[in-house]
Amino acid sequence: MAENMSKLEDEGKKAAPIDGDILEAVLSRVPLTDLVAACRVSRDWHAAVYSSLRHVNRIKPWLLVHVQSTRPPYATNSYAYDPRSAVWVHLHQLPSTNFKYVSALRSSHSNFLYMLSPSQFAFTSDPLRLTWHHAATPPMVWRTDPIVALVDDRVVVAGGACDFEDDPLAVEIYDLRTHTWDTCESMPSTLKDSAASTSMSIAVHGGEMYVSEKCSGLTYSFDPESKAWRGPYDLRPDESVFSSVVGLADGNLIVVGLLGSSECVEGVKVWKVSGESMECEEMGETPKELVEKFVGESYCVPSVAVAAMGKSVFLHNPTDPGEVIQCEILDGECRWGCVRNAVVNDGTRMQRMVIGCSDVNIWDLQRAMAMKNDLGFVPKTIA
Image (cartoon, rainbow, N blue to C red):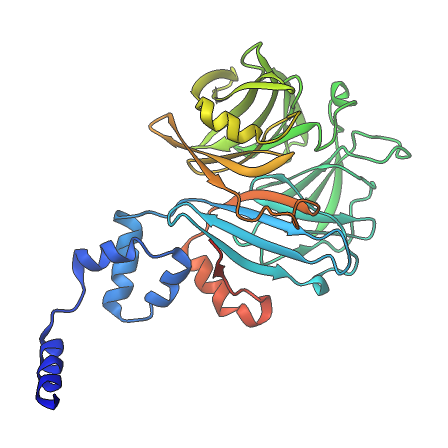
């Protein structure tokens, strides 16, 4: 027996190590969160990890889901779906000690998360939503449901003002460089009855914020540099569209529209908005079987929610987010898929859920894991 064991040990030492294309192929199947540890094995493994991410199975934008309890202590947990590995990951729990007073977690567009109360304004555009910026003071106008967007080095807060405020269309800008607030031209008067995040969608493109009415497609753009509004533009590409939202994908402004009616959704289409003419060019339509999954068990679907980054677009039904429709834009065409939202369960259906999208890379994970003692970042695969 001892002789046989010795022989096996000798053969093991002589066995060729896993390297080259074989190692890259193996690593291409490993979830991104686990590749951080793989990078530390050796220089060869480090090189193989990065080569695999560049050439074999590239990183794709993550779908982020944040769930906030509506009861004390108002715990907020963050989850992510990594399309590259097709796995769900529990990222972290947002420490309540970061905020003096509890306020609702919100997001006006894909890669920006914020909390707003009468006494504070905190926000993050960090890929993993770990690092938050706390403004020295909240906006001067008190708002309950504003439109909020990060445009370069400025945070634009518009509309959504309380009834007792003099100007329901007021616009304020928070400068990240000077940490000061500034007022500017109010939103166009035609948006008076819809100047809130529940009625409008927004997208940031080319240094401007685009705001669009979900029910009509009426759209304006705002330039924080010149503090001026432009428009209106008509982004209702089809008469059969009863609700639409704008987003940014593949370097273009896009429109995602629901066809039919809120009681009977007949289809979901994606259009690209071209040039200064703001003309809409159809890119793709969701397959019928995915439309059924999108609707879910809802009797009424008033709108569609979109989270987009890079070439990835994630669509879901705000009233039943159990299924998320994936759209990957390749060579100007849409490739469709569907992923079950593993975060949705009986416990989370009564909680506040915010869904976004983020460009996460291995360097972001490395930095986050290095800071895990302070941030509580311990990613764990859940599905």
